[in-house]
Length: 186
Image (cartoon, rainbow, N blue to C red; front, side, top):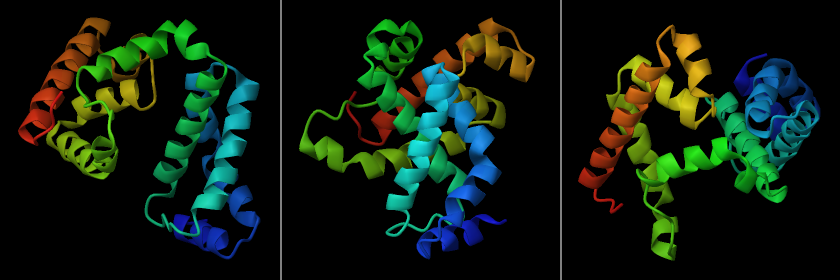
């Protein structure tokens, strides 16, 4: 079933929308959650919570052309919130390491003005990602969106871990420079 048809089911408030979404994207969404929470049962709960969140969010939104990205963003946020709720972020060095790496590149939302600027920041990030070559962009996304370990990224792309680390370091520096040129203070 096409994404547009699934979104139409959501808009019609037809419960088959959840079933069709699960059939089409369930494994990928559960895998994304599993990378974050590291527990299969919790990952499945995150996937189910994401379907509920999508059920509640789709009537004002209609992500016909980007349903997977829409669902993936929701499941990722649900999984990260699950980690926060369990106070695992403090104990999980991997997620803390990623947070520390990105704090050096992204402005902190410490006031109302910064929070209102989220949309512009999202556009700037998408613009930056568009300037990267395919390999660099994919390495960056695998690390900071999918939260893949460096060893897994190296294996996936057939490169050394050292190259992955160097690429990530350079891309973070490029991101910092790009955002500064866009007027963000870091």
